[in-house]
Image 1: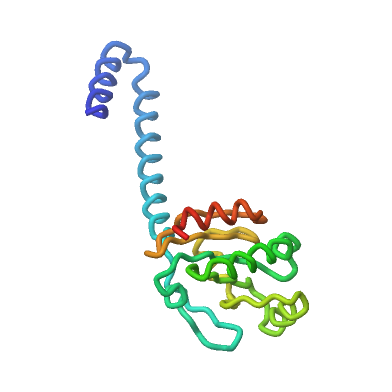
Image 2: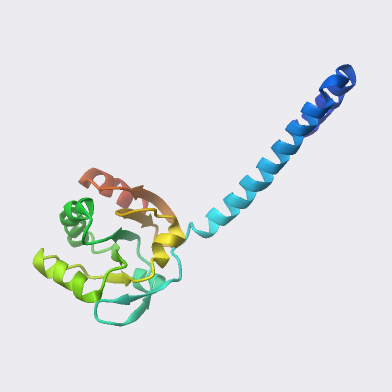
Length: 183
């Protein structure tokens, strides 16, 4: 209804001020193009709003699909690298949260490092997570548009994206994400 009223108003104004015809029509074209681009972008974003069916390698060498690891639970997915100081600083908070929330599946997805490097890092810092996965090609980061590390995504039990945090996590931000995911 609003669009129809705007079109009628535009036609009335064009009859009243014909010298603005090119400018008004250019505005209409830009608006239509922006709407089409925005609609396409939103459609693409909706596909990224779910736990992707991407297969990654576990530290033990098995291929696992992310939804398989979720097991119908809310998910905290952290994309990290051993060379990243903020990633290192947030590891204790993630480990504490995993231990305190057995009803949530925590997935620590290492970005493009070797199995040996990841195992050495975890051993050196005495970190023991249930699900550490190797994203050797950056598929997960690419799918969700993570331009850097750390990035943490929170999914509800039905696999829908509930919240995203780019950058270092605090205990409070981690708890907010867990709450939004239904944990």
